[in-house]
Length: 195
Length: 357
Image (tube, rainbow over all chains, first blue to last red):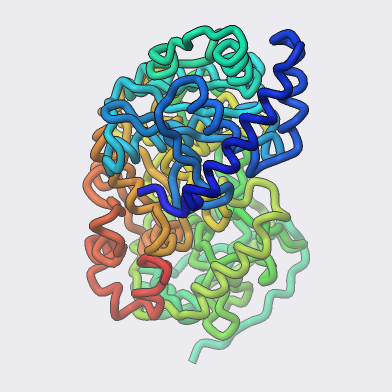
């Protein structure tokens, strides 16, 4: 089970704070500028980075996202999108840890999915993705994309990677442009999220 | 009483050979002092460094190292036998072991055919014997046919193992010296893993320093089976081993077209992880979800198996060495190969055999 979750009231207050901060940044600006401002806002934090990712995912339409405290090694995953049938484990890499999503993130995402499928502490399905979310997408020579393909070909497990910038874009589309986000694309994401 | 003579020659062209009338019956390897050589005439002497040309205790031959596993893959081709570079050639043409650098892995012991490397149970480390009696003579011509005759006696004689005690000092030295030297000696960990696997009969190659083409720490081959491997002997990423090996398996399957069922994935540890760590549970999770059965090899086990001159093969790896949520004790695996290990090894039951508390 996900442990050490913060007190509900505390979570709600922090969520409101992060969403308020982000919404302020959306005022009278383009999506590109919002992404620049948003990444700058959260580039120096670790705990807040974990929290804001959970908040954005809820804001764009996922019903419930549980985030563990950074550095809590008792849990195998940093966050989880809790769903009646299709829960998604999430590995988060804050900009204070690493700037680019790397191969370690992919390995951890794979392990998170295996642990969830085995221990069943939230319901999921094998074909549902396991996510690695970080500050920036990896470069082409990082081996990350090849590793995701290799893992899928071998174990039939999809690892999806989403940058913080992509999440901010989704947030802007939802809250400013009032667009419905295609969550199915995230449920079954393999590789990079193309927004 | 056999009178011991001191080495006097200083010429590195000299080589020690057996006297013409000496025919070896056997060499005994103990873990208590020098290794006795018994002759058919009833005489007995100590195994000694004979200053051989090949120096198998120092360097592997190209044939021993050049194992064809994946064509074109850059590997670590360092041919040193001693992972911690404790062995050096001396002025007399023999070898010395620096006691400050010897980690007690024992790789060199099985390589020396003349029984010259022995365990000094006072210092609790391996040393080289350079003293010899009239069973030997020094000659100055390495091309002399007598040299070959003498060497073939060593290579063809029986080795009798009389290891009835492995001390806590031996193991403590092994763990502590490895810990203190690991960061300062290039590829100490990987060369140690490679060499012990080679010595117990598993042909393997390790990754080249700074080259990520081989997405594994090592890869072995035996009887048509591939053995992808990751090692974390003392480091902080022991919990990362299962996911690292999974990625290696997928690389081997997807890029090199080695079916998962044809792979025996192994992780190598020194000290077993704590019981409360998730290591054992994750290995069980992986088996439940992917049907991949990760094997855990202990570097200590490999060293002891090598001291006992036992050879393993792919089937052994496949059959044994499962460490998971249900099974966290390595003792039964030792017992499968060394029946009396519990009474021989004072370290039995410690974190070299089972989970750390």
